[in-house]
Image 1 (spheres, rainbow, N blue to C red):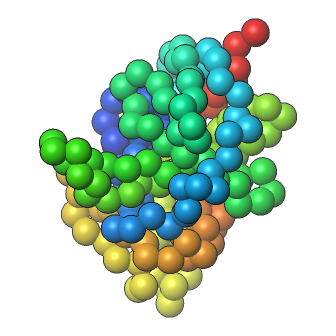
Image 2: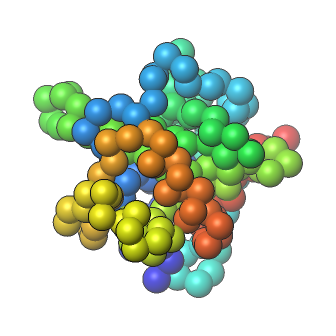
Length: 174
């Protein structure tokens, strides 16, 4: 089963389905989020059960938060070499922030590639001595890696990106 589907269930729900990588406090300053990703209608091609599915999503921006139907609002942060980290807030039924959720996005020639990283992907990408500081817990669909340091998250994401391929490709429609 593809990494993203195992972690987060239905891929049709959003651009960045979060839940496998988290923090209790924001690892990126929301005021420093980038807004250079164009808004509009995107075609998303996703690897699902060994095949590909396509969906169309209209992406909007409000302030420095990106939105699309069915997805939690998220912010993007450049980390260099064509990579960005997406950060979203998971809220409880009362609207209180429970945790911050993350995913990795790569930009190649105006195509946005989502990695959909699982906690296991991250742990398997790190040398054994570096795995222990990453706190893991059992989530609603598997392990959740919880980070408390931005640099550690970035290093872990970069290590995983060297080993894995993105799960979803987004192209802005014409």
